[in-house]
Amino acid sequence: MSDIVTSPRTKVQPKTERPRLYKVVLVNDDYTPREFVVTVLKAVFRTSDDQAYRIMMTAHQLGACVVAVFTKDVAETKATEGTDEGRRKGYPLMFTTEPEE
Ligand code: TYC
Image 1 (cartoon, helix red, strand yellow):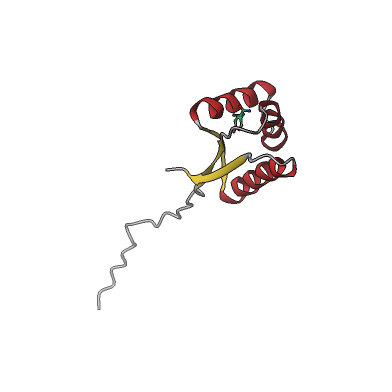
Image 2 (cartoon, protein in one colour):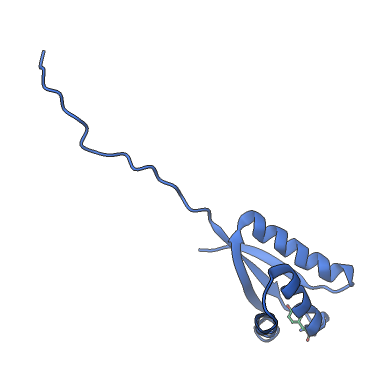
């Protein structure tokens, strides 16, 4: 029997994967008043007046705009909150979520 003791030469690195992030997307429609969209963005996403206005106008002109990115749970909760705010007033305002590449 050999008495040589060898130690392993490879170290196992614990790998902590970062959670996948999800975009919340504001979708344009023809009925929700601009000012109401701004109010919802400020209330649900805590944006400034200026940021909310820019996001709303981008969605208005291009059809949709990414509002922010969050973990899956937070993105889905905020998208639902924003969409529900519109529904409570009878507007078709819609926020969707999609995974970041
Ligand atoms: N297009 C709407 C209007 O002209 C305003 C609006 C902007 C609605 C963005 C939804 O995501 C939206 N009143």
